[in-house]
Each structure stands twice: as C-alpha cells, then as structure tokens.
Length: 599
Image 1 (tube, rainbow, N blue to C red):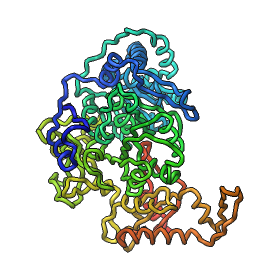
Image 2 (cartoon, rainbow, N blue to C red; image 1 turned 90 degrees about the vertical axis):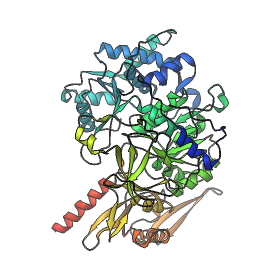
Image 3 (cartoon, rainbow, N blue to C red; image 1 turned 30 degrees about the vertical axis):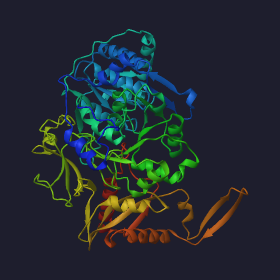
Image 4 (spheres, one colour; image 1 turned 180 degrees about the horizontal axis):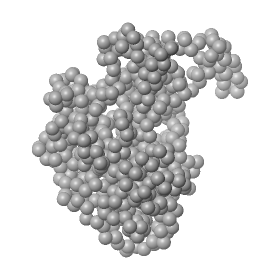
C-alpha cells in the first residue's frame, strides 16, 4: 500500500486534499502476506515493550488494569500455536473463537493466523442454535472458549461431528505463563499468500440463514485507507512520543467485523494500544473508561452515541476526555448526534460505510475534507464506488441506486478489500456481483460533490400511499425529541394505502413515568439544592405524547413521512453488531395484519 501523506503535508487545503489523496493513491499488495506477522511479530521485534493490549474489567480502576506488551502477545501466540498444532490443526482448518474482549482473544487470532489456519469469530451473545449452525457450517475442528461459552460448546459437541477439540481459555493462559520469560523465542510462521483465507465471518442473515464470508489476509490492507481516514490519520502520531500516542477503544465485539477489522487488527497493525473492556456497555462506563485510559480514538455505533447523548447532554461537566476522532457505522448517525459530538465533545464524527464482504469503502475524514452532516462521505482512497441501477449502470446525481464497489480501482489495479466468496455458497457469491460491481444492497444517492447519502437497506425502504419512504430520516427526526431514546420505522400493512408509516419508540429515562397509564402521571422531581422531593401530577397521556411526536415529525419532514401510528416498547430488536432489526418488526406487523384479516 502506498504510504499516505501526514497531516502536515502541503496538500492540506480542503479544496484539493481529497482529489490528491484519491487520485494519487495506488495499492501495493505483496504476494505473501500474513495478518499476524504485520500485527504482532514485527512489533515484538521492533518495539517489544510497547503496550498492545490494556485489559480493563468492569468496576476496575486504572491501576488495577492489566497491560500486555507486543512481546508478551507474541510469546502467548507462539505457545497457543504449538497447542493448536498438537491438537491437529493444519493450514486452512477452521478454528472457532468464542471469546469476549480480553488479552487471550488477541492471542487466539494471532496464533490461528500465523499457522495458516482460518479464524471463525463467534459472538458470546449467540445462543446454542446459532453457535451449532456456524460451527457445523464452517466445519470448525477446534474451538477456543472462555468460562461462559465452554460449557455451552461442550453441550453442543455431540451435534458437531467435526468439532474434535474445545480448548479452555485457561489453558491458553497457563501456556503463556510457561513461556512469557523466553526473550528470544521464535516461531516459524506459515508464509501465507495474500489471497489465502484468514477469517470466516458470518453475516447477520437478514434473508435466509447466515452466510459465511471468507476474508483473505490482504483484506486488512484494503481496510487501512478507510481506517486511517475515519480515525483522522491514526498511526501517524509517532509511537516514541508518549504524550501524543494513540490509544484506541471501542465497545464493538471483537467477534464481528466492526470490532475485529475496524478496531483490533488495524490498531495492532500500527503498533498502538487498544483497550479491551470486559463488561457491559453503558454511557457512564464508556465515558469513565475513555477518561481513565486517555482514549484518543474510538468507534462508537450510533445506538451507543444516542444513549451517551441522552444520558449526558453536557459530558464535559462530568468527564475529561482526549478524543481526537470518532468513527461511527452500522446505521445513520443523524444530525442530532452529529451536532452533539461537535458541540459537546469537540470532535466531528466521521461516518463510515462498509460491509463484512467489502469493509471500509466510503466515509469521512474531517481533518482532510469537509464532512457534510448526515452524509455517508466519499469513497476512500483505493476504492472505486458508484451508485448503480438494476442493470449495473451508474445512476445520475440525486437518483437512488445500489451502492457498489468495483473489483478494480481507478488505475485498474485489483482492490484488496474484497472477500473471497461465501462459504459453500457459490450461487450467493455470484448473485452479489453485476459484472465487476459488487452490490451492497444499501440504497444511496450521490450529489454533485461526490458525497453519498444513505437511503436505507433495499429491503427496509418501502412505499406508503405511493410515496417512497426511507426509515432512517424519520428515525433521526424522532430521536431529536427529548422523549425519544431510540426509534425504528417500518411499514404497517393498510388496505387503502398499501402501507402506512409506523414507528416503534423507546422512551428516554423518565418519560415512561411522565406519560403513565390511567391518564394521570405522577412524576417525582428531586431538588438538589434543598434535597427535597416534589410531586408533579400531569394530565398528559400516552395519546398526548403520540400527538406531540407526530407534530414534531410533521414540522421537520414532508407531511407524508410522519408516523401514522406509534408504539412504545422497552427495547428495539438488535443484531449482535448493534444494528436495529427492522425486519423483525416488519414481520411482526405483517403477522398482526394477517391475524386481523382472519378474524
């Protein structure tokens, strides 16, 4: 990969910087390439005492957090590699990794990849059926599990004929202790090809069963331009300058693309420090962790940012932070969150767009080119991205189409970002492409400046009374109201209009009590100055709040976009990657409509 210019380069004017970055960039992918070698081995030799992993357990304070250097990471990986080979794991074999954010998880990836095996990340949130399906579909021969996932896997082992060995994480730690003081330990790494499979990640399966996307080693190279841009030139801080050294943290699970390819691996690629947090996400925990470990760069998905905004409208009153960059992806951020990050955190959030199969392809870089609020951004250097129609033709500016990436960059060089294909599913692989264009299934428009504007998933966009409805704009509008913590918009079947707009709303803290049932709400108000409590009896009802939210949307969007119906729920259905499962709600509405029709 051609080296990117530092922020102090002559091309720092917004007007010319993007064109220079995008037009001059060229891929340089070696024939042999191994993720573990560039993420760990080279740093274990060059900067062995630099911190790689800072492990923070929920409730711990900074002085009790455990740190691990790159040398220690390499030593532990070597010990685990030996265990894997003794268990019969060979080059190309699949190894399931069912671990949370912790040191041993990074060890597992490095150990698996450096022997040429294929890592199969599996979330701790998966239930037994989800785990069994993925283990059997991948033909995993070994699984590395922690104290929670191990008994679940052992219960499934009888139904997983290829799964011969389950390796407890404790044995990884024991083996590491046995070798961690060997200073000159070497491991003969397998010289994998850049095009060789490295990671098998299963998609969320919005239609049909989950599909395994086989990611090659070279895909990490393809990720780097987007990672550097979205993190405001991460990796160019100067590792010897401790006062400005980059420290990364994200709540994103290391078992999915956002946590693995957008956080853990690129951070290690640049030889920097990443915080592993073993605990549940909460706004307070996020702010405290970033303050405690002086986090400079982060990936926070929109759901997390919305929660943080609602919980701490003025975070500077409670926390000190050193954030230099925030990347967000998975859903549209919306201008409410965008403004919050700028005004309250002093950071312009860089939205990014990508998929497991073709990650980190479009986004923003606020220090290099202007960010347009609510825009997906521009294609990152090295990626030829277009909005295409059903026949594969590029759509004119302003016309919605499918976001697609070409197999070749603007210079005709193969783009290393591409997955190798869906595991055991050639038909699905072929269906993903129209010629050299790989379709994402996400709809967007492009403006005259080359910025893309998200319209929603192809299967999330719907028509109501003849109007084309994209849910994200309405959801963003609803979240601007102080009563709304989160929202999801879906079509509700309607005999006359075909469908009407319906919103599922999660109320912010305190509003569920304020708009209570029985038409009278009793709100307890604390007065900090006196310590006294007063009782406020409101005659506002749930119906009043619905009318208020509908009027709010009407005042900001087109008349046909306001939700004709609003239903309040405790939590939205979410994928393990933090995305709202609108499909679940849409199917629920369809089932309800069928039931009413049959009455």
